[in-house]
Image 1 (cartoon, rainbow over the protein chains, first blue to last red):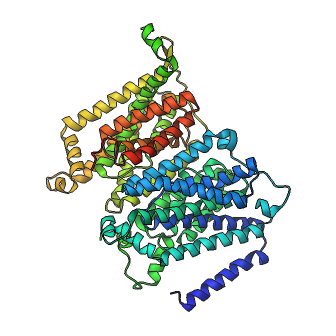
Image 2: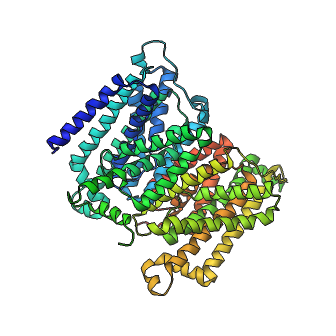
Length: 339
Length: 293
């Protein structure tokens, strides 16, 4: 499917990305890159569902579970993150199924689905805050520094190692995205997002297909949370769970472009660079300014550029490559008010 | 009387009554959101943030400029009503034909804007109105006067909205347009004007809620997050756009939070309410009062 040229471009780009930390060692810039890669992975995980019209505001919850379960198992039971991360992913997966099944079985879509998932991230935030004896509540939580094997504890001091780990995770996300993109599931889910009844009549098991993609998305988001926790070594309920994080995911994915594989990555680059620039430019006065700019941009993007920066750019470059799918067409029309 | 009170655990009864009082304010919030949803078919994710702005307005007018509470309250209601209309005019109106998800996300962007605007403009300090209302003692139970006042004011507000919707021409038009969007335009109703009025009305309800909540809670930029999600849950539980369902659901939720808070921390009351909500999604996915299909 993939053309020779595109394959070569991906290969060259990847080689350059792998070589980067060995050539360029500025710790601050590497730190920013690691953050971009980890968040890109989280945003990509969200967009796996979001691109099929399953807008979830519960992903902050999955991410929080990934981060907190891993850290709690490590601190209280001494369980290595190598076991803790899969456990946390399973926990997030089970939660996704518990919430997802009734939603999909009883046809809870649109507004209802968004609000139910919003409740989910609310629950996780409240549980983390309420169990403050174990989780430290809203003051945050730090996994214990290991004195033994660093690999076993998944704690590394140098940025290069983390950069490579984050790069691997990010690449994994992109590969999964493409895998879904080429699977039969994609056609089933696109049919569902356009008309559930018609899809069901055509033999698509609506509930099962939606559950599968939700589970996949939740597992990956939990992994992102766990990796973020291992890298930052400090988590608070507000940075890894809750509505703000969920909205941040939606925002980045939409700004970058929902319907292209690198869209969420572009979104992560833009949002994180924006936040960092404002932080450096304004110093402590910047508290709040980055979100103010985020919010205004989000509104403007949804009104004027709903396909995102990368999505619109690719459309501009390849005008008549393919007929846009119906739910994208709908989105394109918003871009030109008055048509 | 005392014999009657002895039957019940006094703390339990106090929690139950406090729950009812809390339910009044929650019902008011849910009514505003339901109104917007029922008429315009849009969910304002940033609804609680409008309340937050209203609370700041009250704080600054009363505490900073020394305006009397009862003068400041109508001004705040007016201000938030204007904000609601502006939100509709600037954000929702250009997106009316867009997929509903886009409208919802755009108001999510407004949530960010309002929150960070408050952070930038007012800082992240907790601010208190500084009005201490007396505590009402009844038997061995204590009720805060502020809660009682909120409950009564919320009820008055809801009755006023009910009268407006049933007794005035504009109210009738609003109810008609929520029943059939296309036909009402043909009947000579200006949908855009009705939408704007509804948004202002929804904003006014948020403003009223702000005036009442500011008596009980401290103001800070993220205060909306503490009662925003619960308001959405109430609306979904009652059935989006279903006023009576929302009213009942508000009291159910308030009781759960209040009783949960009695036996453990307040957060666990919330967790319990959330868990109850998810269980209810299995049993009554389309809302409490929905007819079974």
